Image (cartoon, rainbow, N blue to C red; front, side, top):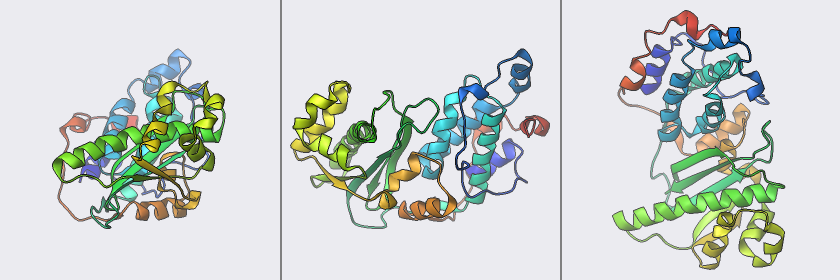
Length: 290
């Protein structure tokens, strides 16, 4: 499996498996980056960028559970420090502990639907982290976790910005599916756990309160009024996209993983040349920050 290739190339085959990709309350910031010549020299030979690149493929293709962690860690690629590298290794440990998990497609018959969520200023940079997943017949076919460009002034604004982003993704998938198979039934349900964001997207009378928000984020209002999307409230406990906005404890993460139709895997081996080139990296360098 590709996970075994990662473990081998970064000399973590004997590492203990983990069951969460990021520790709860983990504090990672640019303040932990090297600030002296000695610290920079110590990190120079650590394959941080290669580690993120290897995890990026998994996060975007087969393993939604690490999308948030990889999104956070990729912000430090220019100047990573030891705490950042330790966090990368934590994600690899998690992949080892969940190496037998796979996506199960076509488990249900709900058609196209989306879940979206956002934290509010939980990270040191105070930009909200947003996440979404788009399901087709109950299984995720698209997902993302990203840092918002704006600094939202409230949870409703953070969720409103996230709604516009997922709307663009759903419209693309609607067009693709309609071309390949058959027209997608409208309106497409989009589930959000913030009543204020749903009201902002559904009622134009709030426009005066949102002038400071970039015009492109008001795109969702037109789509709702045209009947393309049906914004529906769902409690936070049932919001699958919660896994893309913050580090979660193991019971919560396992519940959301089941909701994402992730189950035990069987299959062959995928060998990647992209990380094979780093298999000669010294194990002492890999564990240097331990």
